[in-house]
Length: 81
Image 1 (cartoon, one colour):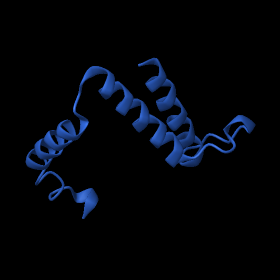
Image 2: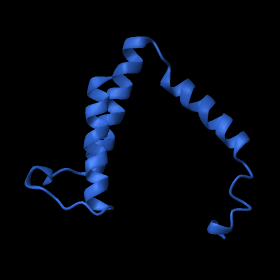
Image 3: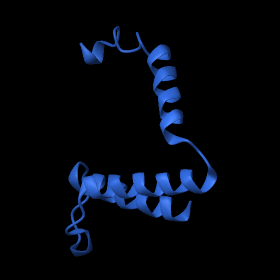
């Protein structure tokens, strides 16, 4: 969990610099959004392997649940029209 938290912090830093108001620091140079996302995915895969979680099945179930639950969610959102 500590490693995952560190990786999420790095992704948050890239987002804050790239899309927010924070300016880049010298230590941020070379940090890429895609690399930070991939680092998080790698850590999650490792955690799943260590705990016996089937991520493929879990993701499938999550997508099915969200698709069913949110199928009409955005249709009446005036902000998205």
